[in-house]
Structures are given as C-alpha cells and as structure tokens.
Length: 149
Figure 1 (cartoon, rainbow, N blue to C red):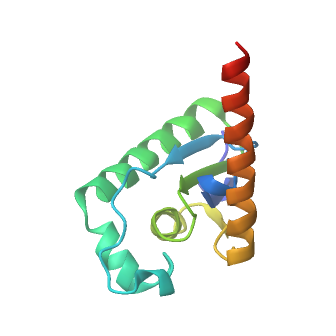
Figure 2 (cartoon, helix red, strand yellow; figure 1 turned 30 degrees about the vertical axis):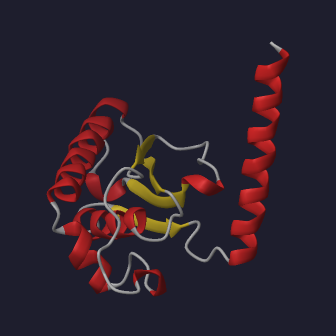
C-alpha cells in the first residue's frame, strides 16, 4: 500500500477558452459557478485574498471542494497510483479555478506532496485575441459542415 506522503498530487487550473488538458486523472469544470463580486476583480486573480474570500465562502464552492476531496480519496484508494493529476477549469483560468486549486493545495498539502500549476493565469490580450480567432474559425467550420449535410 502506498503511504500518503509518497503520493504526488498535481493540481492544475486552466481556462476552457484555451483548451482542456488531455492528460489528467480527474477533471472538473466550474464555468457555471458565480464570478467574483469584487470591484475591479479583473485586476486580481484567484490567488488574491479578496477573490478567495468572496468565492470560497459560497455554498457552491464549499460543496465542490468537499466533493473533489471525496472523489480524490476514492480515486487514490481504487487506483493505487503514486502520481495523480487533478485539473479544474473555468472560462479564462484566472479566478474561479485558481481559487479552488489554491484551497485544495492548502487542504491536501499537509498530507500529500502537492504541486500547483496555473496554466492560463498569465494569458495576455494577444492570447485572448488568438483564442477568439480559433473559436470563430471553429464555429465557421462547424456551421459550414452543418449546411453541407
């Protein structure tokens, strides 16, 4: 049996707008969760205490964190892996998913080896413009495909 301190958990936040990671063990989406109700929240990210205080005290966030931990414990017990990657995505990967990953790191870090990565935290306006172009091209492709059928 693998000891808890020998298990490495990689916590990964991402923005759905920039693509879903392909190599993860557990994947969650919080796009439908409320955004922060903080003035000028765009100047902060999910690591900032104002954002965390706003989001993580909401019932939906408390429930998802509890659910993720329960499912992670079941996964560890069933799969007996010593390395697990858990990813959480919101729309841009800057607020909701980041705040939840940070909370999970605090909760799990006392028992497991935890590594945190926020893939899309530093995306720029240029990246967002490229993403919009990809989305437009994708939509155009699918719309054209629908018309051909």
